[in-house]
Image (cartoon, rainbow over all chains, first blue to last red; front, side, top):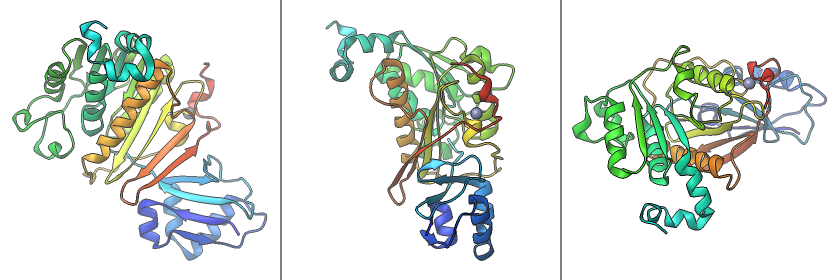
Length: 80
Length: 241
Ligand SMILES: [Zn+2]
């Protein structure tokens, strides 16, 4: 099952480090949409943060997700 | 070793005298002299970057002092451009420090960075970061980025043509108009990482954050090094190496 890990503020807001989901041959976009039914905050996180699959930042959510994939949703920062 | 090289003896042990000469011949622009800028500027001046340009248009304010370690209580109300130059000249009188009391915009930025070898992003908002990113792409200048909030931050190094640019990684960030929470040691640490990147870019020693995004959460001590790729249709796609 793909794992979705949350970091920093996102982890605190969702109250969990990791969510495991059933997903077979679907796109990252679909997976995140399905998940946002149970966790409505995810939509906001994806808009405001970065999504990485297997430690690589993803620019296009159309990519297909495999069972072994590790997805991370991370906030980024703007101060100096 | 002559007297002026003596102060660099401990770092010459790492990368040799030739590399030190490269640092002494280099010119670096630091955009923003706040929390990140304080840390970057101290370390670049002490490492012997031959010429440093400081760009900042603000005055020192009391709540800056928790993190902007270039300034003292006596500097409150003074221009950061002026106070930072004075401070750094006390630290290293053998290098050249130029300070520019300006807010960067599309019109002035090219002139500021055109004669520099490396540009360091110590800004506190993304509107200005996009202006700086685009100018670095136009003039093909390496850009060392960092940004911080609370006890967290990120850093990467952009080499125009070779790596993703800031717009590839953060395509549409809208700045929030609020005072961000921040502990001084966070920009202190990220500024140190940026200074390290600058020295490595100039000397060729070690590995840089090219094509990588470093994200550190000091609250939980989580370190992540993510791979990054150029974004399709990004303005940086047309830039040659
Ligand atoms: Zn780009």
